[in-house]
Image (cartoon, rainbow, N blue to C red; front, side, top):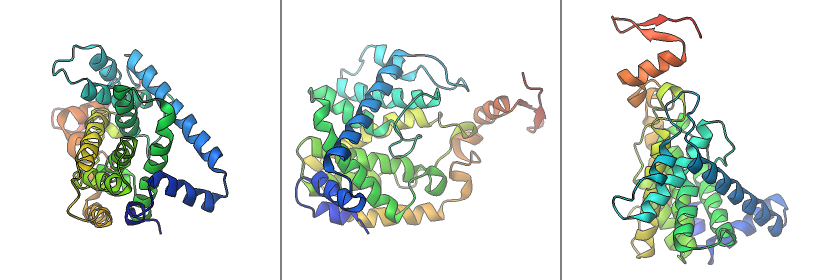
Length: 296
Protein backbone atom coordinates (compact mmCIF):
# COMPACT_ATOMS: atom_id res chain seq x y z
CA UNK A 1 0.00 0.00 0.00
CA UNK A 2 1.39 3.39 -1.04
CA UNK A 3 2.11 5.61 1.97
CA UNK A 4 3.35 9.12 2.51
CA UNK A 5 6.44 7.60 4.09
CA UNK A 6 7.17 5.81 0.80
CA UNK A 7 6.95 9.14 -1.01
CA UNK A 8 9.05 10.93 1.59
CA UNK A 9 11.84 8.36 1.25
CA UNK A 10 11.68 8.16 -2.55
CA UNK A 11 14.64 9.33 -4.63
CA UNK A 12 14.31 12.90 -5.86
CA UNK A 13 12.21 14.09 -7.45
CA UNK A 14 9.31 12.40 -5.67
CA UNK A 15 7.15 12.86 -8.76
CA UNK A 16 9.52 10.63 -10.72
CA UNK A 17 8.97 7.81 -8.26
CA UNK A 18 5.18 8.30 -8.43
CA UNK A 19 5.33 8.23 -12.22
CA UNK A 20 7.38 5.03 -12.24
CA UNK A 21 4.97 3.34 -9.83
CA UNK A 22 1.98 4.43 -11.89
CA UNK A 23 3.54 3.11 -15.11
CA UNK A 24 4.23 -0.22 -13.42
CA UNK A 25 0.63 -0.49 -12.18
CA UNK A 26 -1.13 0.63 -15.35
CA UNK A 27 1.27 -0.43 -18.05
CA UNK A 28 1.03 3.05 -19.56
CA UNK A 29 3.94 4.86 -21.13
CA UNK A 30 5.38 7.76 -19.07
CA UNK A 31 4.93 10.09 -22.03
CA UNK A 32 1.21 9.27 -22.17
CA UNK A 33 0.76 9.98 -18.46
CA UNK A 34 2.63 13.26 -18.76
CA UNK A 35 0.54 14.23 -21.78
CA UNK A 36 -2.68 13.51 -19.90
CA UNK A 37 -1.50 15.54 -16.93
CA UNK A 38 -0.57 18.43 -19.24
CA UNK A 39 -4.09 18.27 -20.70
CA UNK A 40 -5.59 18.49 -17.21
CA UNK A 41 -3.43 21.49 -16.39
CA UNK A 42 -4.81 23.08 -19.55
CA UNK A 43 -8.34 22.36 -18.35
CA UNK A 44 -7.53 23.94 -14.99
CA UNK A 45 -6.19 27.05 -16.69
CA UNK A 46 -9.23 27.30 -18.95
CA UNK A 47 -11.59 27.09 -15.96
CA UNK A 48 -9.58 29.80 -14.18
CA UNK A 49 -9.81 32.10 -17.20
CA UNK A 50 -13.56 31.57 -17.54
CA UNK A 51 -14.10 32.03 -13.83
CA UNK A 52 -12.14 35.28 -13.62
CA UNK A 53 -14.08 36.82 -16.50
CA UNK A 54 -17.61 35.86 -15.46
CA UNK A 55 -19.91 37.13 -12.77
CA UNK A 56 -22.86 34.99 -13.82
CA UNK A 57 -24.71 33.57 -10.85
CA UNK A 58 -24.86 29.89 -10.07
CA UNK A 59 -28.23 28.16 -10.24
CA UNK A 60 -28.87 28.86 -6.57
CA UNK A 61 -27.67 32.45 -6.82
CA UNK A 62 -25.35 32.03 -3.83
CA UNK A 63 -22.06 32.44 -5.75
CA UNK A 64 -20.71 33.40 -9.15
CA UNK A 65 -19.13 36.82 -8.77
CA UNK A 66 -16.56 36.26 -6.02
CA UNK A 67 -13.52 35.46 -8.17
CA UNK A 68 -14.08 38.27 -10.66
CA UNK A 69 -14.86 40.68 -7.84
CA UNK A 70 -11.59 39.92 -6.09
CA UNK A 71 -9.60 39.92 -9.32
CA UNK A 72 -10.94 43.31 -10.37
CA UNK A 73 -10.65 44.93 -6.92
CA UNK A 74 -7.67 46.98 -5.74
CA UNK A 75 -5.03 44.91 -3.97
CA UNK A 76 -5.59 46.47 -0.54
CA UNK A 77 -2.86 44.44 1.17
CA UNK A 78 -0.36 44.79 -1.69
CA UNK A 79 -0.11 41.02 -1.61
CA UNK A 80 -0.45 39.94 -5.24
CA UNK A 81 0.40 36.30 -4.61
CA UNK A 82 -2.36 35.88 -2.03
CA UNK A 83 -4.89 37.62 -4.21
CA UNK A 84 -3.94 35.56 -7.26
CA UNK A 85 -4.08 32.26 -5.37
CA UNK A 86 -7.47 33.10 -3.85
CA UNK A 87 -8.98 34.37 -7.10
CA UNK A 88 -7.79 31.36 -9.10
CA UNK A 89 -9.22 28.95 -6.53
CA UNK A 90 -12.61 30.67 -6.42
CA UNK A 91 -12.71 30.97 -10.22
CA UNK A 92 -12.54 27.20 -10.57
CA UNK A 93 -15.13 26.52 -7.90
CA UNK A 94 -17.53 29.09 -9.27
CA UNK A 95 -17.19 27.48 -12.68
CA UNK A 96 -18.12 24.23 -10.98
CA UNK A 97 -21.13 25.91 -9.35
CA UNK A 98 -22.21 27.16 -12.81
CA UNK A 99 -21.94 23.57 -14.07
CA UNK A 100 -18.85 24.51 -16.12
CA UNK A 101 -16.00 22.15 -16.96
CA UNK A 102 -13.43 21.67 -14.18
CA UNK A 103 -10.89 19.08 -13.05
CA UNK A 104 -11.94 17.35 -9.83
CA UNK A 105 -8.76 17.36 -7.74
CA UNK A 106 -9.54 15.20 -5.91
CA UNK A 107 -13.25 16.18 -5.85
CA UNK A 108 -15.40 18.84 -7.48
CA UNK A 109 -15.96 20.55 -4.15
CA UNK A 110 -12.21 20.94 -3.61
CA UNK A 111 -11.35 21.51 -7.28
CA UNK A 112 -9.99 25.03 -6.79
CA UNK A 113 -7.31 24.37 -4.22
CA UNK A 114 -4.63 22.81 -6.44
CA UNK A 115 -4.99 25.17 -9.41
CA UNK A 116 -5.24 28.10 -7.03
CA UNK A 117 -2.04 27.19 -5.22
CA UNK A 118 0.05 25.64 -8.00
CA UNK A 119 -0.93 27.76 -10.99
CA UNK A 120 -1.18 30.82 -8.78
CA UNK A 121 2.39 30.44 -7.54
CA UNK A 122 3.65 29.55 -11.01
CA UNK A 123 2.08 32.61 -12.61
CA UNK A 124 3.30 34.84 -9.79
CA UNK A 125 6.86 33.64 -10.42
CA UNK A 126 6.61 33.41 -14.22
CA UNK A 127 6.99 29.62 -14.35
CA UNK A 128 5.60 28.02 -17.54
CA UNK A 129 2.93 25.31 -17.48
CA UNK A 130 5.38 22.71 -18.79
CA UNK A 131 7.08 22.71 -15.40
CA UNK A 132 3.82 22.00 -13.59
CA UNK A 133 3.40 18.50 -14.99
CA UNK A 134 5.74 16.74 -12.57
CA UNK A 135 4.43 18.56 -9.46
CA UNK A 136 0.91 17.59 -10.54
CA UNK A 137 1.99 13.96 -10.76
CA UNK A 138 3.31 14.21 -7.20
CA UNK A 139 0.01 15.77 -6.09
CA UNK A 140 -1.79 12.77 -7.56
CA UNK A 141 0.52 10.45 -5.65
CA UNK A 142 -0.17 12.23 -2.36
CA UNK A 143 -3.91 12.01 -2.99
CA UNK A 144 -3.59 8.33 -3.75
CA UNK A 145 -1.60 7.68 -0.57
CA UNK A 146 -4.23 9.44 1.55
CA UNK A 147 -7.10 7.66 -0.17
CA UNK A 148 -5.55 4.29 0.60
CA UNK A 149 -6.06 4.93 4.31
CA UNK A 150 -8.98 7.33 4.42
CA UNK A 151 -11.83 8.57 2.27
CA UNK A 152 -11.25 11.83 0.45
CA UNK A 153 -14.86 13.01 0.31
CA UNK A 154 -16.66 15.36 2.66
CA UNK A 155 -19.54 12.91 2.84
CA UNK A 156 -17.26 10.25 4.25
CA UNK A 157 -14.96 12.17 6.56
CA UNK A 158 -15.94 15.83 6.69
CA UNK A 159 -14.23 18.65 4.83
CA UNK A 160 -10.94 17.71 6.53
CA UNK A 161 -10.91 14.65 4.26
CA UNK A 162 -11.87 16.58 1.15
CA UNK A 163 -10.25 19.98 1.15
CA UNK A 164 -7.69 18.76 3.65
CA UNK A 165 -6.53 16.22 1.08
CA UNK A 166 -6.53 18.76 -1.74
CA UNK A 167 -4.51 21.18 0.40
CA UNK A 168 -2.01 18.42 1.17
CA UNK A 169 -1.74 17.57 -2.54
CA UNK A 170 -1.29 21.23 -3.44
CA UNK A 171 1.30 21.82 -0.73
CA UNK A 172 3.43 18.93 -1.96
CA UNK A 173 3.14 20.11 -5.56
CA UNK A 174 4.14 23.70 -4.77
CA UNK A 175 7.07 22.46 -2.71
CA UNK A 176 8.40 20.32 -5.55
CA UNK A 177 7.85 23.13 -8.05
CA UNK A 178 10.08 25.34 -5.92
CA UNK A 179 12.84 22.74 -5.61
CA UNK A 180 11.89 21.00 -2.40
CA UNK A 181 13.17 17.51 -1.60
CA UNK A 182 10.78 14.54 -1.33
CA UNK A 183 11.03 14.90 2.45
CA UNK A 184 10.11 18.58 2.28
CA UNK A 185 7.23 17.88 -0.12
CA UNK A 186 5.64 15.29 2.14
CA UNK A 187 6.15 17.34 5.28
CA UNK A 188 4.43 20.21 3.48
CA UNK A 189 1.53 17.86 2.75
CA UNK A 190 1.48 16.74 6.37
CA UNK A 191 1.54 20.31 7.71
CA UNK A 192 -1.37 21.21 5.45
CA UNK A 193 -3.40 18.17 6.43
CA UNK A 194 -2.77 18.34 10.17
CA UNK A 195 -4.13 21.87 10.25
CA UNK A 196 -7.45 20.91 8.69
CA UNK A 197 -8.31 18.13 11.16
CA UNK A 198 -11.78 18.58 12.58
CA UNK A 199 -13.10 20.63 9.67
CA UNK A 200 -16.76 19.81 9.06
CA UNK A 201 -18.54 19.64 5.70
CA UNK A 202 -21.63 21.87 5.90
CA UNK A 203 -22.69 23.05 2.41
CA UNK A 204 -25.79 25.24 2.48
CA UNK A 205 -28.65 23.36 0.87
CA UNK A 206 -26.25 20.57 -0.02
CA UNK A 207 -24.85 22.67 -2.87
CA UNK A 208 -21.06 22.89 -3.22
CA UNK A 209 -21.11 26.68 -3.10
CA UNK A 210 -21.28 28.11 0.44
CA UNK A 211 -18.87 27.86 2.16
CA UNK A 212 -17.06 25.77 -0.47
CA UNK A 213 -16.05 28.53 -2.91
CA UNK A 214 -14.40 30.72 -0.29
CA UNK A 215 -13.12 27.67 1.57
CA UNK A 216 -11.08 26.71 -1.50
CA UNK A 217 -9.61 30.21 -1.56
CA UNK A 218 -8.59 29.95 2.08
CA UNK A 219 -7.10 26.49 1.77
CA UNK A 220 -5.21 27.28 -1.43
CA UNK A 221 -3.37 29.93 0.58
CA UNK A 222 -3.07 27.40 3.40
CA UNK A 223 -1.29 25.02 1.01
CA UNK A 224 1.13 27.73 -0.11
CA UNK A 225 1.86 28.51 3.54
CA UNK A 226 2.62 24.85 4.23
CA UNK A 227 5.02 24.78 1.28
CA UNK A 228 6.78 27.87 2.54
CA UNK A 229 7.28 26.30 5.97
CA UNK A 230 8.58 23.05 4.51
CA UNK A 231 10.96 24.82 2.12
CA UNK A 232 12.41 26.54 5.18
CA UNK A 233 13.11 23.03 6.59
CA UNK A 234 10.25 23.13 9.10
CA UNK A 235 8.65 19.72 9.53
CA UNK A 236 5.49 18.18 10.88
CA UNK A 237 6.19 16.99 14.45
CA UNK A 238 3.74 14.13 13.91
CA UNK A 239 4.95 11.77 11.14
CA UNK A 240 2.94 12.23 7.92
CA UNK A 241 1.22 8.84 7.90
CA UNK A 242 0.25 9.29 11.55
CA UNK A 243 -1.37 12.59 10.58
CA UNK A 244 -3.43 10.73 7.97
CA UNK A 245 -4.37 8.18 10.64
CA UNK A 246 -5.44 10.94 13.02
CA UNK A 247 -7.57 12.54 10.31
CA UNK A 248 -9.18 9.16 9.64
CA UNK A 249 -9.92 8.66 13.34
CA UNK A 250 -11.55 12.07 13.65
CA UNK A 251 -13.53 11.45 10.46
CA UNK A 252 -14.95 8.23 11.87
CA UNK A 253 -15.91 10.02 15.10
CA UNK A 254 -17.62 12.85 13.25
CA UNK A 255 -21.43 12.71 13.39
CA UNK A 256 -23.29 12.29 10.11
CA UNK A 257 -24.81 15.77 10.50
CA UNK A 258 -21.37 17.28 9.88
CA UNK A 259 -20.53 15.22 6.79
CA UNK A 260 -22.05 16.90 3.71
CA UNK A 261 -25.61 16.15 4.74
CA UNK A 262 -26.55 19.84 5.14
CA UNK A 263 -27.88 18.89 8.59
CA UNK A 264 -25.36 20.87 10.63
CA UNK A 265 -23.05 23.87 10.74
CA UNK A 266 -23.59 26.71 8.28
CA UNK A 267 -26.30 24.75 6.45
CA UNK A 268 -28.52 24.95 9.54
CA UNK A 269 -28.22 28.70 10.13
CA UNK A 270 -31.42 30.71 9.53
CA UNK A 271 -30.03 31.96 6.24
CA UNK A 272 -28.90 28.49 5.25
CA UNK A 273 -32.34 27.07 5.97
CA UNK A 274 -34.05 29.89 4.09
CA UNK A 275 -31.91 29.27 0.99
CA UNK A 276 -32.60 25.55 1.21
CA UNK A 277 -36.33 26.20 1.48
CA UNK A 278 -36.27 28.54 -1.48
CA UNK A 279 -34.46 26.04 -3.64
CA UNK A 280 -36.95 23.37 -2.63
CA UNK A 281 -39.94 25.62 -3.27
CA UNK A 282 -40.80 26.11 0.40
CA UNK A 283 -40.61 29.00 2.85
CA UNK A 284 -40.17 29.06 6.65
CA UNK A 285 -43.42 29.45 8.64
CA UNK A 286 -43.72 31.55 11.80
CA UNK A 287 -43.15 28.55 14.04
CA UNK A 288 -39.83 27.69 12.45
CA UNK A 289 -41.27 24.92 10.31
CA UNK A 290 -41.60 24.94 6.55
CA UNK A 291 -44.54 25.79 4.29
CA UNK A 292 -44.65 24.12 0.90
CA UNK A 293 -44.58 26.62 -1.95
CA UNK A 294 -45.66 25.96 -5.53
CA UNK A 295 -42.68 25.67 -7.85
CA UNK A 296 -42.23 28.56 -10.24
